[in-house]
Image (cartoon, rainbow, N blue to C red; front, side, top):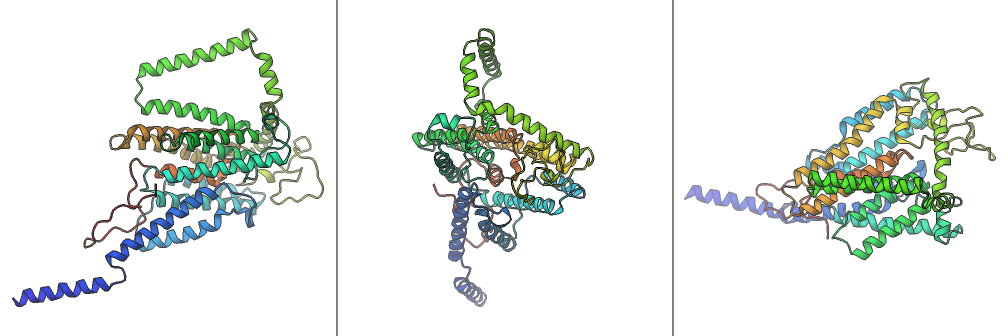
Length: 477
């Protein structure tokens, strides 16, 4: 009896201490829920502010960056306290890209520009790693995808309002190859086009979960804003991405090999028929010629010639430095009189203005920029990263299709994200997309995408053995 009384007194004392402990079961539950809601609000803010680049802050910072600094500090503190392991996707490609970039820095004619580019690269990747760890366990990320589409509609409206302020108040003026190009909240039309192209796929990913009128209305608005950018690369990349989405969508639905062959033959037959009607019989040739001359499609030839001239100049410098001319140093290479792209306009300010006519332009191509600026090792790493995104999406579908509660919905979501990444990879031929915050945000969502309902976020510490199990706190519906 004495032993039993001692045990009961000890248990009662421990229970009393636990009930008065500041981190009791109830307070832990409340703290966990508060933390999850705080991260939810941050993620929504990040999705909405990622495309807002104007007006720029010090060092070309954006409105989102102060929030990111606070979030990164909170993330580091949470990881240290919870003793949680951190997911680091694409570590091997990023190491290759970093080593190649550091080797190329030795050849930089503008060392501060190279250092700034490396800092920017590190910041974007660290932010991406934080996003993956924060977003993991939140299911199919419906809230964030809806927030992305709504933010894209706002950016599209701002772009169209800017067009109207410059006199483009009709579709004919928007499609005119000359005149003002919409930029929205970006500082370049091509950047806006890249963001809007990804936004089209985000809207398409809301199949069955978004009001049909709002969904297709959003897509129509985004496409009009894309046309206002007059960005040929963005529109062509969007078309290729939609084709890729359809192909992967058919694969996730289990279309038979005979269906693939039949679909391919029908598509090839239709294409050959169109070519024969236009080229052989001249049907619609005059209308197509009129469209090319009176729309932004007419800019395509001139745009290609300008880029080829820039690339020839950059490769001339690259032949002298096979390891790369230095990150961010494309626009700091001296050009000859024949290679000049800009007229002299007043006083020359050569730091980060792009106004000096005796300096080259940016590569306007991620692949050429990596090989010229950072060398073959960094290019290999960048290609590995792009390939691993595709592999991750397809592997995620294979692993999830046996457990997903709605296989058709998750298969369609996988196909949509696959098409979006095809679009981004192709648009990298016309602009350096890996510098964009919205691209790394997209990758963070892709890496955390899961089927089914949201689970307990990976950031939170595991419950102790004496603590009752918690129901998952997911993203609000």
